[in-house]
Image 1 (cartoon, rainbow, N blue to C red):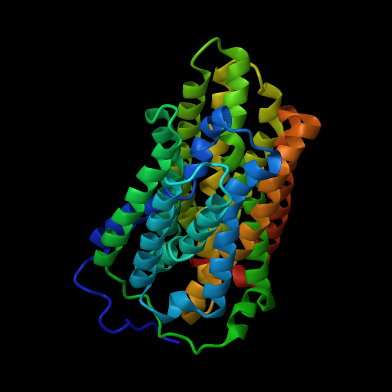
Image 2 (spheres, helix red, strand yellow):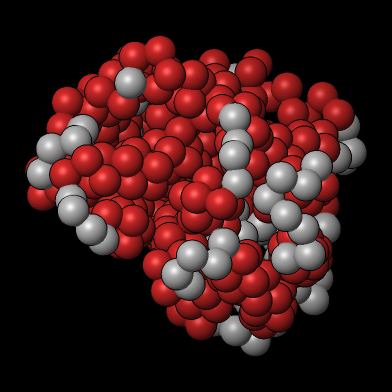
Length: 411
């Protein structure tokens, strides 16, 4: 099907302005995702939480995202309605949900419900933002989606900086994230839609099954699953890992140092996402994703052995991990976009994130129990299983004839 613009949606904004506004909206909206992670150390200092409750405060967002993306993919929402309206409405509801958190205590049973609603709304932000970026692609899809992933990374890192600035008040990251979501809801309304957009596909629930029926798409999604097994568990528990490690090696200021280090490590991933996109457009997506997973998997295996030691080496390895763990993320999405029927790009991207985030529910919940069983020295090591299997899937895709459609034939 030839690409045709949706009536009345392209607007007057050109590519540079539209992408800039989209990046601002993405950074602002995604700050709601890790508000709990940024506040967890301060929450634990004043309330007693068990391992399941700790994980639930984080994984409830993932669960909501999975439900939201599944419904969105089955109904092909990103390909059937104006993505800017879907993005804006989702960000607005997420802002309200995070404001409501301010009226609760961390142990309140309603808090995970509100976080679940936040995750549900993020299904209308993250993959929809990638769909919007893809409409402007012109042999630079990897870089464009890399920009979006960089924005997501900065948005995910920002609550850690807010937690540092907010002292011991765990509510500050939630309030700031809500304000960011409101800003995103307004900003995205001014984003233009590019020329690479297709007519809405017929409503068929079976459209989503194309992600499994199409063998090259299946391999790309399996690679993404390996990547996701590692990424969000690392992001979710890095702050607590650093906080407890620094407390063993520093006489004072360990908490603030851990927050700053977490912000730097997670935020450095923005550089990795940009570099990954630039390199993949030139040297191939399967090559870049495989290399990134090998490096990040090695960091997952090794960083635990530095636990309790001097902060310098831990931060150094953490920065390498933070860059490599996200460098490949956008390239899985770009690969899926290039291998998909153009009328189903939004649906395939949404379904990809749905399955990937469903898997993160497992790895996020396993970390606290792994810490109890084997300690922080080995708790992150099992995350390396994902990158190892993901690399195998992407190398198999590289050898498949359909790989000539990836990155202009660069595979």
